[in-house]
Length: 155
Image (cartoon, helix red, strand yellow):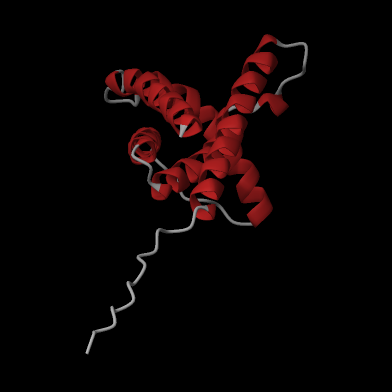
């Protein structure tokens, strides 16, 4: 229970920090979209070359709004003990972490490398904590209702 509360509070804190980004959203998607667009374009270009066909264009505002919404919904559901919320957050972390925290595109001497690596490892730790939560949630047997044996009638 303590681990659940700790991970839940970290996720709520992350949602609140992204709430600031939601307030700065504006008509162009705000600073989050400006940071995400170049990284997403590189990711899309690499993925298109691997798949052999062009991926459709995605509006940066919609992408940022989807990420913020998924993080908020998943975080709230997770805090209330829902495995579905944990699965939403797992999917979100699996997709966004390698795109947003692309430390592998920088040399170790650059300042950005250490910042991005730190954030990447933080998200990796959250991913592991969510896997732990799901594993613990699935390992606890559901409470079964015991049927009472009927009492023998005295004749």
